[in-house]
Amino acid sequence: MTVVRWVVTALVVAGTIAWTLSDFLVGLAGAFAGLLLELTAVQAGLALGAVLFGLRITHVIIGLGGELKSWTRTHRRIVLRTIPVLATIGITGLRPGVRRRTVLTGALSIVFCAAIAAACWLAAGTAFGKGLALAATACLLLQLVPVEQPGHTSLGWFVFTLPRLSGRRLAELEARPRVLAGMDAYHRGDLDEAERIHDELVPDHADLLTVVGLKVVTECARERYLDALQTVIGLSGRQDLGTRELAFVMATTAGIAALAVEAGQFPREVGLETARSMLNNAYEAGYPKHRSNGTLAVLALIEGDYARARQLGGWAAESSENALGRADDLITVARAWMADGNNAKARELVAEAHELAGWSPRVAATRARLEIT
Image 1 (cartoon, one colour):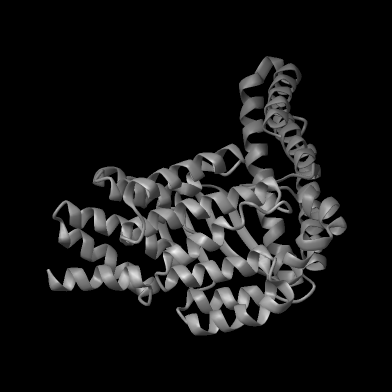
Image 2 (spheres, rainbow, N blue to C red):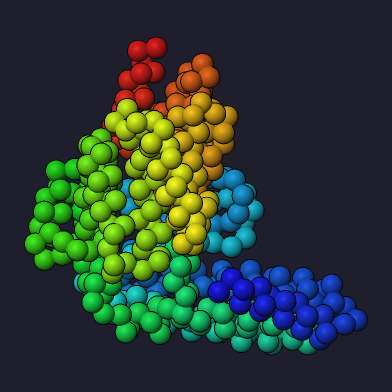
């Protein structure tokens, strides 16, 4: 799919230049604007569909670059970045009938994007408008191609592939509202409730990745990292998992291995080698490298590269999609500052992490260490 994107991009650039030869720089500026406009329309259409058809919006990230301001709640994180172009949202099933609701959301987004692309052609009388229309149309056509990768799912997948989904993949989707209730309990620190929901799901859905995932996160929250590691490693041998699912499994294995080493529950050299090997395998399966910054930050912290740990942890915190994830990344950065003797800076970060997820053992332990010092 990456090759296809580059080919389409090259065709749009060539077509814009050929169509606006006497003023091609303005035409290329229009093409760039059309790309940004249509990509934003995709996310806006998904957000509108989620509201209308009963899906939950888990996060909204507006712009590029560093974090300018954020609003974090248990169920949703909104981030405004320094360069206000593009946006990304996350959606998940909140009520029964997840497939139908998701298909309708994808279809609405396609209609919305098509309307935007059609409107761009009304401006095709100028060089800027020609580039705008070409890029917007090309972007729309690419979105219609069914693609499901670790870092990207196209509108075409929602509308053309999702209706034909069956077996375990469909069961994963339809069980999501109940799993989500367990994840909500986990995110607010009610681990007993999360485990109760998991136990209720197991008799009918023991093979679902989302159910196993609920078990893994609660085991980590109770600092039973070796149990969590054993659970997630057991998934890697399953024959029913696709490449996308295996990528997430391997990335999760890496993250848990790093935390197990940090907590002193796993031999250092074995744990570091396991984490890095799993990350490399995840990358080969298409896992986006920027999503592993949190794990890489913990690895750098363990290895004593505190400046690198702060940098990676900061990037991970800025791109976090929920309160607990941001709190965990802030704690990694705080521990790196502590290791360098700057407890004052660490206290600032721990204070924010405590507000976000004070129940987290990693947050509580770091806060306690600072209070003692």
